[in-house]
Amino acid sequence: MKKACILFGLILISLPILSQYYLRGEIKDEKGNPIFGAKIYLQTKGALDFNSGDDGTFGLPTPKAIDTLTVMMQGFETFKAGVATQQYQKIVLKMFKSTTEEMLNRLNSFTKNLGIAKDLVTKTETGDSYNNLIENNFISASTYPETGFALSIDRASYSNVRRFLTNKWKCPKEAVRIEQMLNYFNLKPSINNKTYLQNSNTINEFQFNSEVTNCPWEDKNKLLFINLQAPKLNLDTLPPSNLVFLIDVSGSMDEPNRLPLLQTAFKMLVANIRDTDRISIVTYGGGVRVALYPTSGSEKKKIIEVIDELSANGDTPGSGAIKMAYSIAKTTFKKEGNNRVIIATDGDFNVGQNNEDELEELIAKQKQFGISLTCLGVGMGNFRDSRLEILAKMGNGNYAYLDNVGEAEKVLVTEFTKTLYNVAEEAYLNITFNPDLVNKYRLIGFDNMRDAINDSSKRIEGGQVGSGHSLMAIFEIESANKNASILSNYATLNLQYKRPKSKELIRNSYVIPNNQIDLMQADSAYRFATSVTMFASLLRQSDYAKNYNFDTVLQLAQTAANTSNFSQKEFLSLIEKADVIYNPLKKRKKEK
Image 1 (cartoon, rainbow, N blue to C red):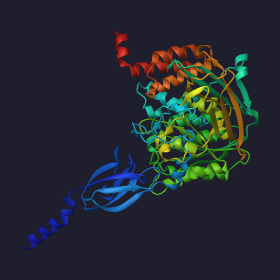
Image 2 (cartoon, helix red, strand yellow):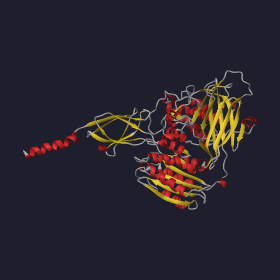
Image 3 (cartoon, rainbow, N blue to C red):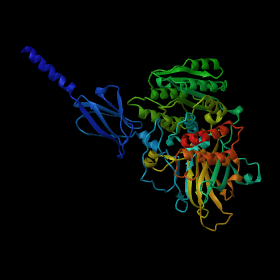
Image 4 (cartoon, rainbow, N blue to C red):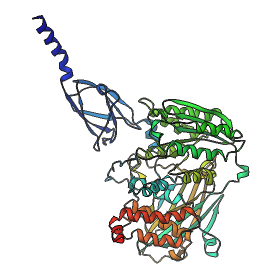
């Protein structure tokens, strides 16, 4: 009898363990939008994490009738509570205040007084993590004549696209950002003839060029090119730099195209620093460590030895590492110098449960103290492009993707001053079109993130312009059916920016003349820019890229590419690679 009682007691004790419950629910933001990809933890599952689906829903098995549920998502407060696993859970995540404020200034372009579309469709992430973009459409110039966009020198998209094509993969269309692909080439139209001298102007330290041509994919339309060339700093008079290398050495970086590539990149950068410059190195992977305290550029051997000794292991405590890097940058701050944190990572942060808000607030605040941020992305598979793009914008900086050693040399050696020295901050171009000449217009590229469009209060924050940078922007124009005078101005452009370390906002204006020319007669820089735009639009599967193909793009690019320029020559080969990848039947026919 005693044995029977003991057996019965053991059965009662084991019942909760043997029982199986299924916790179901949904995760939404405060506006009722489903949240995809939120991390979900159950106390009974330990460190094992799950993710919410496309519609924000989830379903998890658990042995307990009551379990502790934790939900985490970038930009939102962590939810943690005991829940009845037999009940359907409706979880609402609250956005951090810092995230909300950043969303107010996350627009890349904006048309004043234009209402926000309500029928935007959320795209799902594919492989790596990218921000979802909404392509700019045609806008009526008579109703909304004024538009604008932030200037920047980000060019990560091009090298990332090259990585996909080189590996014979299709590009996720969210990875293709047209303005960054144009930025990559630093195109500078010639002004060494009367035609271009008439169309150029210097806005204080900036040189401006414009051109209006026919549109190769839509006969009835025109293309308006806007080119802004920033002044180039004198290398002999560059201010001293206070650089903090923040290097991800976590386990995910243990691949040839990650940490070893970054080690090569930073050693190339160190070879070009001066004795007046100061270098510090902070690493994070299984913990945060100051690998090199502030060291003079004269001790290059010591700096390179530290870089060579780095190895990958551990988790990714990104938040603590960023705090440490900025703390060192502030301690060694050069008042009249170039103070910058350079973060190099695949973007796969593991910032913990309670300090995501601190990370965003920290980055956003540092630019007020004159510390800029450069983000260098590497890797594939779990590459977090979306996070690095936002961090660079929050940190008053720029963002580049390193897919090979050649790109590392381009970013950190060839274009050293453009990457690390700003000549203008909070830079923004505003354009007002003449409705007598322009019926409708569409800005190509500078597309906004879907969340920014939905949640912003229609404000836009300017970008940063590096030394010697040449920015190219293109509008597609539908001409007005009016008898406007040929002497009429096409549009008025307004540039506003601040010089580094200055609070004074500089404003200048320029009249864009009605100087129309055939595209094939225009400067080769404009033809090359057109081919890059068409190429990117095909990769993005744009609705405006239905009247041409890769053959068309290649033919135009061949009329403009400078084959002595490695990047432009390489672009021709990328078009051919894309043609094979996106049109496999065409390859088979050639083989036959």
